[in-house]
Image 1 (tube, rainbow, N blue to C red):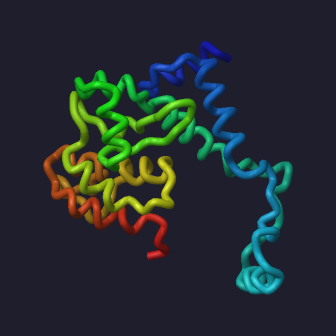
Image 2 (cartoon, rainbow, N blue to C red):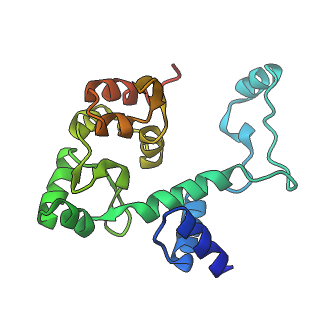
Length: 193
């Protein structure tokens, strides 16, 4: 299994040890909701009645149904594996470790703490940070987890067009696009519309 996983990781461009990657997957799975939550538990009886009447199925996942968490766990594991440590980010930007922590505290870089800071790779390019990153980070809603922000930054957006094709916010910024446009879009994360 390790050889097969190492082949998959290599094809995906991930420089990760198979066992370390599996540990990341296990950790991500533990952080998510229980394996078979009862959706009705999260609503009042009146809300359950209204949602059921509207046609929603609030029954727990059956044992024979696929686990909806699998994709999220895999994406989280890849995000964690590709993230940089403070030292790696400092080396990339040719600055001292304390400058990276300072930028994190100021909101000029983003990351999460997991046995030390982890900084998602999407915010870096070459030997620098993504152009316009500070403008974008100021608009990220505080309640949005790193996984959601990373998905947004790497998903084509209809409002960001390069050569007649929707571009990801990351591509848009790398191509010299106006960071304010990305900031307006990222500010909407978590909003129903």
